[in-house]
Image (tube, rainbow, N blue to C red; front, top):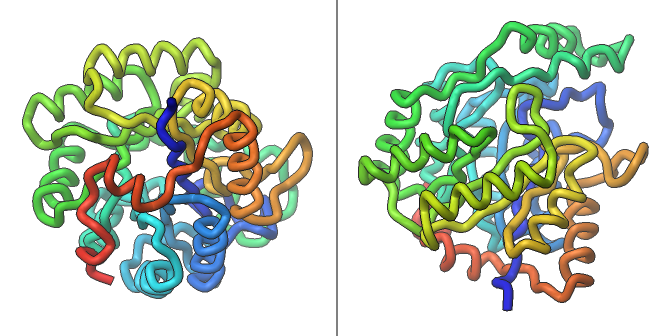
Length: 309
């Protein structure tokens, strides 16, 4: 029997801009509502970013996070995961501020520097809600999303050792698994750890089934049975890759951070809509959806009573 499938939902992220969807959560209240609805629909982990409520621009301010983190915690039992990816172009100190303030059960951690190209999305629009949007997209043509070994060590020691936070290790390419293996060799993390395999970002590994199989087999070779794995795929690849992961005994992530759509040419009206859709697929396949408590136990988390919000 396969283990119940852990669904992560990423409600807003730091990639899509307000012009791209009227349903993208922007304000703290919108982010809280989207997160609570996603948890009620079946997500056991909520992966969170914050945005400037006036402009929708990614914003790492701990004060913004603290406007929605307590409400989500009070309204759900979901595991709250605070991103350390922040927004493209932020320093590592900026990216870490909210997680250090919140001391969450989980935080994301990207396992290597990559080209991170979202500039092609600029060509789809001629009018913008905010002036920052086209400039933000265009700058990624000459941008490296920095996650050096020094950055990784800094985050792991500040959060992992300092707060007992566990990580969603985001791996955008094969080499990132080997970077994680090096981290394991340093003794900075022990199993079970959570690997989020990311497909379809321009600059990372492509969204092809063969790539998923190779990433999974490499992870098994490197880590044996000491890891849980999950898959997210950008844009139109979201649902089919999530389904493939469930079929193969893995976990998955959905949410408007990763895709604005619910089907071909049809924009999602909420994060909960995406969670409900993938949950129905999982259950139709004969699998169960993991509860937050099951996710906590499998990932070795410290518990929601040990956070600072």
